[in-house]
Image (cartoon, rainbow, N blue to C red; front, side, top):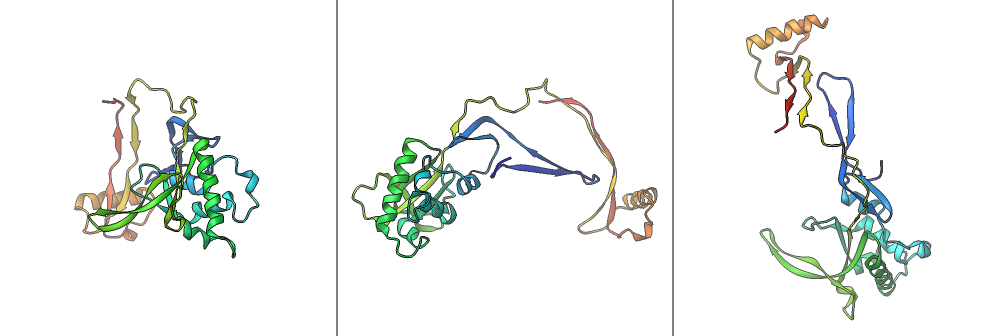
Length: 240
């Protein structure tokens, strides 16, 4: 397992175990050399451990690329309308998260390094962006639009976008092979259930009391809204 993997938990009403499953990707991916073979949450991966490559030389620099990247991952705001996981933050905002005495010019240099390295290699892409007004049914607001290089634009008015772009790994999928299309049968035991409102039918109430007796439960302890759910069997069938 890895940080960001999606897990699905299922539990039978009358059971005693919780089953947790992961879902293999149809096309396994790589994020900066880290294998992603199972379905995952892109934003969690982006915030947790995705990073442009070759940042180890500035790990101890308090205003270097690695430090700026940590701020972006921790404090960047998510862009819900983006087709892929994306975080954005104003360049001037980043300074407030760095040690006292840090300057916007230092931050700009660090961001230039991130944008260059992520454009050459890496699955986490850093890009300069401008704030531009856009309209929506909820009103007007400013949204980031990537610019590529910084050029001679005013840094105080620029933003930085960090997005996840994992690459195809070329590995075979871990999905099980396609079957004949026949779905196996399943069975569900009978059990009692508390209705959220109203009262059960006389028949179901009587069955609930009988079921309680069969389980060694005093029927008088059953809530008046407790009803009976009959057992069910799904026969093997061919998937359409």
